[in-house]
Every structure is written in structure tokens, then in C-alpha cells.
Image 1: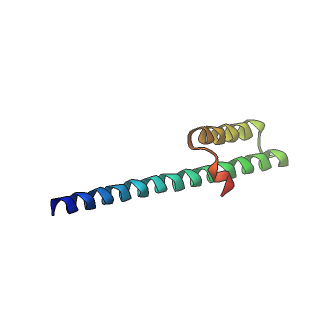
Image 2: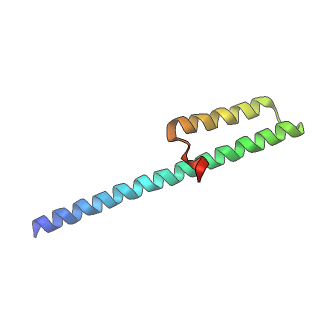
Image 3: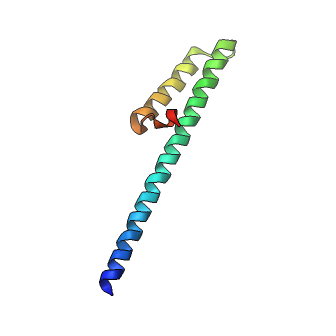
Length: 77
């Protein structure tokens, strides 16, 4: 009986770990999408004359930092 409970506990722990990994991936994708959207808005504002090159550069740097940490998978989804 103890062996069964140990296996069940192990499976539950694996499930929790996998769930957390998936949640982290989804959150990173959303954050990447938000940063990409901000970059697009900054670029659009700059092109229309109401934004600045500095704001566009800051948005680009934030996006590149996110990609360096989390990868660029969100760009393909």
C-alpha cells in the first residue's frame, strides 16, 4: 500500500511541476506579446510624429531583454 501511495504522490508532483512549467510558458508568451504590442505602438506614434525615437528604442530594448531570457517562441504563435 505504501508503494502505491508513493507512486501516486510522485505522479501528482510531476503533474504539478508540468502544470507550473506550462503556466510559466503561457505567462512569458503573454508578456512577450504585450512587449511586441508596445513596440508597435511606439513605432506607430513615432512615425505619426507624436512619439519619440527614444520611446521606440526603449520598447525594442525591453522586447530584446525578454527574448534573451524567455526565447522568441511567442513570435511564432
